[in-house]
Each structure stands twice: as C-alpha cells, then as structure tokens.
Image 1 (cartoon, rainbow, N blue to C red):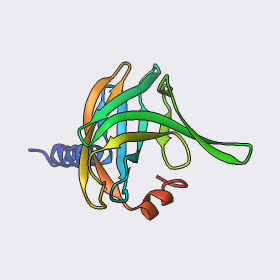
Image 2: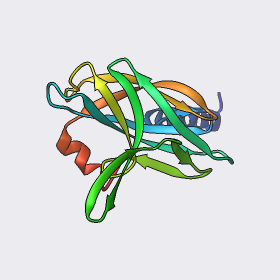
Image 3: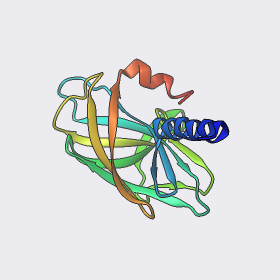
Length: 157
C-alpha cells in the first residue's frame, strides 16, 4: 500500500471515530451532550439537556419523546417575566433551523421528565427517545450529572 494512501486511510479512521465521539447523527441532525440533572429522592420531575445541530438545508422540529423512567416527557421553556422566572410547556416543540445549533440548557428551553418512577442519581445513565418532525425518532443515552455540574452548562456546553 503506498504511504500516502495508508496515511489517508489512517486519518479518515481517526476523523470518523472523532465524529462519532462528538455526536450522534439522525438524518441531518447531530445530537450531542444528552444530560439529565440529578434529582432528590422522591422527586417527581427531572430536567434534561441536549445540543442539536441541524446540518441540513431545511428546518426540523423536536416535538416530543418518552422515557421508561418517566410517565411523560415535555418540552419546556423558562424565561423571566416581570422579574420572575416562569416555566411553561412548548406545545409546538422546539424549532431547529437549517444550519443552526440549539441548546436545551438550564435557564432556557429544556426537556422536562414528569412522573419520575426513580430518582436520577449522579453517574447513572438512562435511555430516552426523542421524536423529531422530519428526522423521526431515536433512543439516546442520557448521563446523569450533579446539579452543580448542570448549572455550569448554563454558560457553556
């Protein structure tokens, strides 16, 4: 095998492995950093966060999902109104414009897991399925992070 071809094949293998480590592709959507916030024992709701990049030429929409550890999954927004933080469901889901990245994170749009049947403990992993208008649905593994760690995401991620 010629040296240049070997180097090229090696670089391709490294790039492909890096791409998989950086996110999961679902159609034109690249899904990264699925995280759940740890909850106190007995809590009946929990929050989830994720980044989604639309690499395509048309918008898509995150419309819902489901998880075995929760009775219901809703998409929520948080925003300040008259100096009070308010949260409400996003009935029409979350738009993901073409070429854009959206971040569901603390203090903004996020996943809300309702009717938890187990506490979400730091270090655990739980599976949840997300449903997109065009890309379809896919199950993702969410890592449970501490409250302190998820609060750092508010400014990074």
